[in-house]
Length: 152
Length: 415
Image (cartoon, rainbow over all chains, first blue to last red; front, side, top):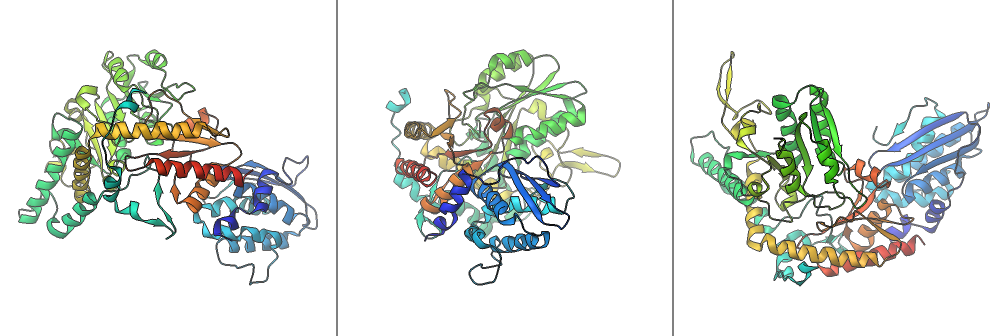
């Protein structure tokens, strides 16, 4: 498979065209806006975290390229039902993978389907697209409520 | 369509051989198809060699040393200034100020013209088509002087509304700053009319010529503009060098831009007197090799002939426009009657960054994807970003065919 088809896999195209968990929920406990000023991608992320720190619900709204939209969509699927601790571990692993510091085929990890984004590491200009939703998640769960930007 | 009938007589293959980078492959795989000429142009061998020659044989600082190298460097540097003055038909080489780029040229005028002429409640006019480099410096100058920024509106084709412009002209307006050609849409603006109308109110006009100098012959005396700014790297010259042409009557009344060496006549701790034009605006050691390289680029363009370049690039534009209009999912943004060889477009259901990445990876095609430093233009057309293909005289019909094939492939991937 060429590097490009690794990046634009059917799974990514599918999530881009039909994003899962898209929309604004009626209730949320945590919220964060993410913005990539270089290309104008933006995301609003909403979380409902219960008293035991479990992510009960997670939804997003936003617009941007296929990588940013698919990454947000698949992130919501992956993190729903996870504990805060587990979710942050997946965030670390996802970040490691797209920065080229973690090879999901060799090292043990909890990424599952998210490994589809491993091709992003070949495209330095697109890493920020893939990480935007995750930064928003990190900002939301740590609940400082401030807008996050890929340029900080 | 009259221009279609004209012939350019250019041997594109021979021209391409003059540009070493056009012989390279992207990631050792696909031959480079460079269609981002509005961002920067590639350099002909003559320019590259001139820089090598300067550092190998002539390197010395200008206007200072009394030794051979410095005298040689000073002579070449001032000769470059004269070449550039001739290229845009400036009356005097002392009206050519070297800067580090078009952005600095505009900032220089915004700051120094602003300091001399702009007061509280005065107005500055720009257009809705401007690059950030012709917006932000004026916002800064207006904020400093408590002046107001007025914006000429555009129509849905991306053309300046001249009636709206006229309605903005009052005695409060101290300067008008507009682009010759829009970097985001390619619209060629009616700058001669704009200048004439402004001059009726004795208002000087700055033209941002970054996108125009590579594509058409510029005659600042015929235009009668008061300032004309452009960058070296967009006219086949080096980065780090730009030009500001300004009429002496304004330049003399403006305070210096930066203080330092070279821009002074005498310095005591009580008082400094400034050097005459152009040195007054050129503090510190300038980009000497780059200025010489830019002059070589201008000589190269003149050898080819800007009239021929204009004819051929117009043909490339028409060819690409026709091919793109055959793709139903593709929409061209900016349909001005007068357009330079640049097409901004959007594809239904595909973000410009995905287009840019796939064109690069699969086809070796370099295009720009983004807001083109013209966010107000994007907002006007209600798009977050566009993909922009911009053509040079070294581009070919075959390269445009590759672009069209690439676009059709992308539509398949996202089907």
